[in-house]
Length: 122
Image (cartoon, rainbow, N blue to C red):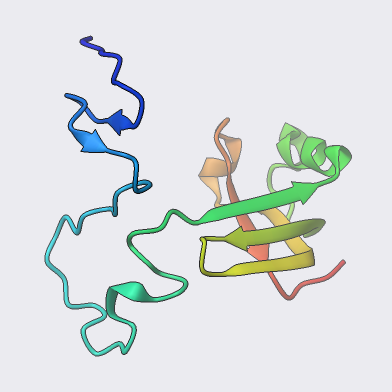
């Protein structure tokens, strides 16, 4: 594995990316016309391809233990959690949402999939 140490303010495989203006935009990798009739284009406040969205979910440790416990793997019970979305243009918080494991066979896997219901309150 080849690695290098770039000078401060530069990044990339060969240190060619100037980071002084912030993180470069994510390039469009495939041609698409999904949003061509959308007034926002690629600058949609929620679905902006040049921003990395962050989702934060907090729930009680006992509830996480419940979800991860194999004896509860098929439970459809929603547990109380808080949800926050941030992407630089939009910041939204929901202090009380429903949270549970989702799927069927995948519920027995170590890496879980989760379902968040923004309008379900416990």
